[in-house]
Length: 284
Image (tube, rainbow, N blue to C red; front, top):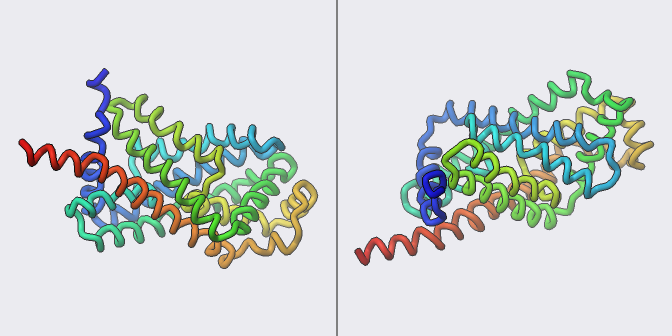
C-alpha cells in the first residue's frame, strides 16, 4: 500500500516543490492555465446549480451540489490548471526561502484575474446556451437567488467563511499529493471539497461564476419575475447584482481564502513537518 501512498511527512516537501514549480512558470502559460482552471471551477458550479435548483431542502440540496462541484478541482489536478486558492500554497516555498515573496504575489495576481476570465466566459456561454430556461426559467431564478445571497453576505462572515473554505481546498490538494494513482487522487480531493460545499463556505473563484451568472440572469425579465415569485426576492435585492456588489463579496472572500491557504495550511503544515524534518536532518 505504501507504494501507492506518499506519507504525511513527505507531503510538505511536495507542497514546497510544487510551489517552486508554479512560481517559476512563464507568465503566459500561467495566464492560460489560470483561464482553464477558472473554466473548470465554473463548470463545477454551473452543474451544481443545475442539479439542485428544484430542491427546497437546503441540506439535501447542498449534499447533492457537493457531489457535482468537486469536478472542477479534480480536472485541475488531473489535466492541469492554475487555481488562485490552491496557489496560496506557494507560501510554503516562500517560507522555505526557495521562492521570493514577490513571485508569490505576482503569481496570485495573474492567476486571480485569469481565473476570473475563465469563470465569466463559462457564465456567458451557459447564459447564451439557454440553459437558464430550464424549469420554465426556474434555473435562471435560482441562479439569481444564489448570486443575491453571495453579494448580501456580511464582510466579516465572508472572510471567516473564506478561511474555512480554503483550509479544505488546500488540504484537498495536499491530500491529492499523497496518492500516486488517478483513483487515489480523485478520492483524496473529492471529500474535502464535498464538505466545503455542504458547509456553504465561500470560494472566490466559484463566486466569479455564481455572481456574474446571476448578473446575466437578472437582465432577463422572465428570470427576475420567477426569482421574485419563487424566492420572494425584492427589486432592491436583485439590483445589488452589480460590479460593486461583486467586489463587496470577492474582496473579503479573497482575503479569507488567502489566510486559509497561505497561513492556516501552508504555514501550519510547514511548521509541523518541514521544521522537524530539518532538525532530524541536522542530527544526522
